Image 1 (cartoon, one colour):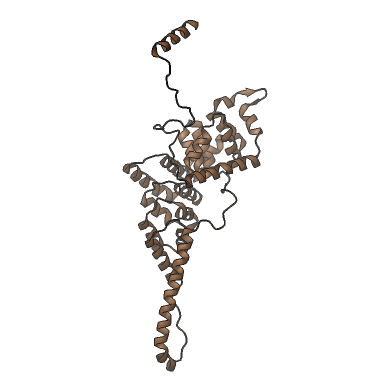
Image 2 (tube, rainbow, N blue to C red; image 1 turned 180 degrees about the horizontal axis):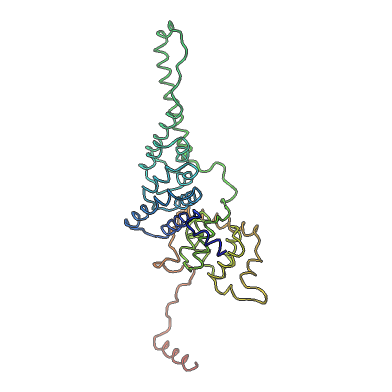
Length: 351
């Protein structure tokens, strides 16, 4: 595992910029309320890294930023103008792209980008009109009919009237189709949230952040690997038994040696030995890929429902975190102050 990680960090391997790109994205996602200077710095760092990274890394970065509510518009325009295989998920899901950026992408790119934008929810009237205009121009000019010259003058007025009526009907039909497509959700909903195997890049990031003990970056990288919200990554990591993280790593298909290293680094009690094995090995042996996959999909489905309900996320691992909702409120003092003092003194004597 260590040899593979060293190979990943070598510049000649061509993957160093991929790692730096994903680390930059995960670090930006961890900012709860980014300042204007943070947005400017992220845009300056992201553009050269995005241009120099591989297609797989750019696709992962676009998928991660599609769930971020505060993406700079220069970054959104850069991702939106990327090839459709990279920009599709961002154009379809991101809520941080304004209408001006969408209009620039529609006018600059082809029908594939316009189709991805048409699948967004809550499209404005200006964007819908631009999509209709783009659809009409992409279809090409209508070829004139081969009408004899003698009949052309007699039919010119009728043909002009018919063409105007047909154009209005066609435009209205296209407008209705695009509005219906914009209002509709997925017509063929999948059986469960998509769960892709863990990529080598995400696996290396998880091992790196587990080794350095950076819980915030580890939770952000886990959420990016799952293409889910940061809240779910934090909830998985906050299970002190390590079982939730073991289920997630098993479902993602992480190599067993790397999974044992991550569990032992984040939960030191799992590195203790029990007979001829460790607690982490016993925990991993009790899990199967099928059951772990089903449980992780259930977590992802619940997280999507909570996100659709508009629940506000307050990071548990952030320094300015609020009160832990899992802890019971402190009971109010109901005995007199003198009685409490007498009871405390008596407790001290018994000790």
